[in-house]
Length: 498
Ligand SMILES: Cc1cc2nc3c(=O)[nH]c(=O)nc-3n(C[C@H](O)[C@H](O)[C@H](O)COP(=O)(O)OP(=O)(O)OC[C@H]3O[C@@H](n4cnc5c(N)ncnc54)[C@H](O)[C@@H]3O)c2cc1C
Image 1 (cartoon, helix red, strand yellow):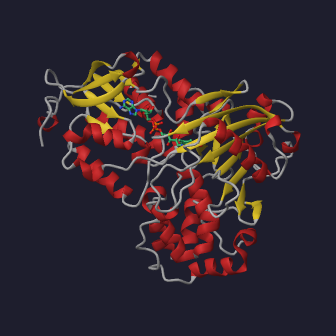
Image 2 (cartoon, helix red, strand yellow):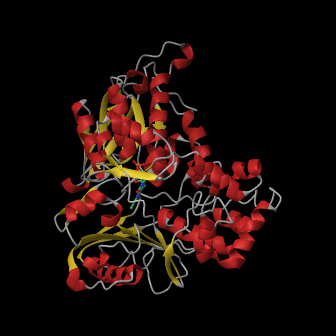
Image 3 (tube, helix red, strand yellow):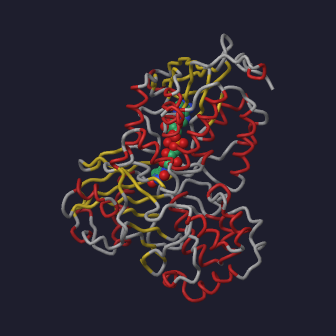
């Protein structure tokens, strides 16, 4: 392993790094830049897009400013609430309408039963499971408590584990709609240790998958599993940008980092950036410390030359999703006929959406902004069919066609008349790299990558592909990794300072 000019820690004479580079300005990169600047470093943050925030952003539809990507955060840890407090956003935290969500199965719509995690029931005998599972499905699920703990314990995919313990009906009618809605990947392809760390250990401990799911759920605070901000999660990105600017972070947008290398002139790193908007002009930025906060394939490609056998860690590109947002004048939706929205089973043929969020029923602030009888529906496309790596056909549709499909899907899912004449505005947002593909083998690749990057001086990597999807995981992991980097370089961590 080569050593960088700055890697003199072994001798105990390391010079304190004074500058840092952060590549990627999603929530992970922005949080990293903030914590590095708070510790006193001069930071440069480079983002390929023309705006910061990555998957946490805003778009305007019919005069309403709405979330274009993430719309909530999981309340199972205090990582996001702590960051919101640091950013003076705590007073805007809001809970969703407790009405809960629905399922759309081949026989129609029904309220979704309460489950432990990932659609796995905590109590297989609960009567709320009856409509979705039927008698035989419940009888099979209850076998979980009688099977030896070893059954399914060796399965690596969420789908195989659930099928082995609880049967095909729980998998197809509860877990697949949930997982497809969140990860855009079929459970048979999902790495169980990546999406539900602790679930297999819980099975060994409790001897039942339902009990393990219940134990994971019990670790979350009581009440709603998620919360958001009045005005939308996009304010998190906006406030982070303002905060890093006020701390003197040099922020650069529209620069795609295309290569990175050790700085031959001084300790640390240099990145080569290309500006596609400006005739592919290139520029170089330098920093003694480097935080890679881009998606997985980009990070491994850029770090490749500095890691042994980098092909081993390279994640596949993530699933593609498209979100169609409809703003409708539709009094029939005033009563929120499907609670906060629906998750759609992949066995349903008459609807192509994988989920629908009734945003104006879920979040009081959206209803307030929209006004009387006006509703916001957000439909997600990009169903995960097992074994398929191709772009889902709906995601490839032109915007106009996708909006027409969304109107028709919304009518079926909501069970009320919804037609183009009620449409006040619509928008389509497409996400290509924001969701990591957490396929079987992902957690091993992540562990191997983390071990390998530890040997490369003055660099860390953060982001959803390493921490797991979702703001709670991304924020917690980023702050831990940055604190460790700072401690290794003789700094107080931001947590100690704040
Ligand atoms: C549609 C959608 C809905 C979601 N909903 C929720 C939700 O409700 N709740 C929740 O908790 N989570 C949700 N998530 C997940 C959550 O938003 C993400 O896990 C989190 O925002 C990821 O943050 P990140 O910084 O790791 O990655 P990203 O947000 O993807 O940021 C990575 C950044 O790196 C930049 N970049 C990439 N390559 C380069 C390069 N070569 N040079 C410079 N910059 C580069 C990208 O442009 C991007 O801005 C959702 C995700 C999506 C896509």
